[in-house]
Image 1 (cartoon, rainbow, N blue to C red):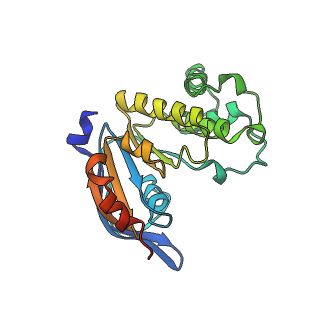
Image 2 (cartoon, one colour):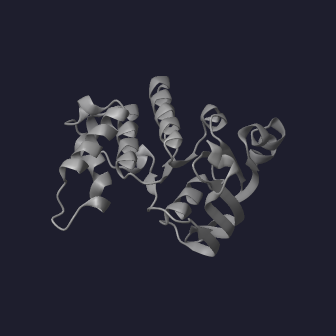
Image 3 (spheres, rainbow, N blue to C red):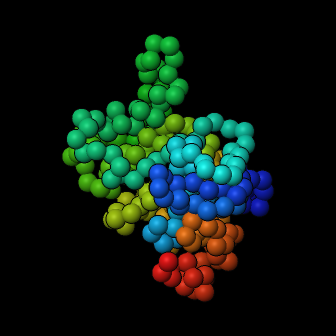
Length: 235
């Protein structure tokens, strides 16, 4: 967890971004430390998911600059509600999608790819669900499948959008433990979260308000009553 005091894995300079007719991020400048875990917190509409999308490269900037430094393409784990229940995918097929960027010319999973998929499922405790359809799973099982898909990408930057929202305590704890493990193994982890327990377990914290950075730093310095009152006040 030394990365919280070391170099930045991602830097954002005067970043503005949003959607047609709606600007969300407004001249946001921040840093995400390498080899550490960062929690992005703030009220609904503060820009947490948009910020993740900008770092992942799926939401274009309208102004500013994002620097991601050397490293592989980030792995982006969306909320489970963003994945349609009607997709006829099994858990194994879902997790295997994380290997698409590693496939060779024939587009087939190698023995190594299959090992990575199996290991990712086991890490999240869903190896026994490999043949089940996503639509048949509970919310916690489905979210663990999506996190396993992110791990299967073997990226050095893992981005997660509300990975533990509305999950039971056991599922939340399993995901939290896995994220701590991969951070210790040298992966930079960034999660947008409403879960203050998860945010306090992070090394670094970004507190957003109306698309701007209100404060960043260690959770103990950021997650204060005074700043909370400001961050959650009506627009």
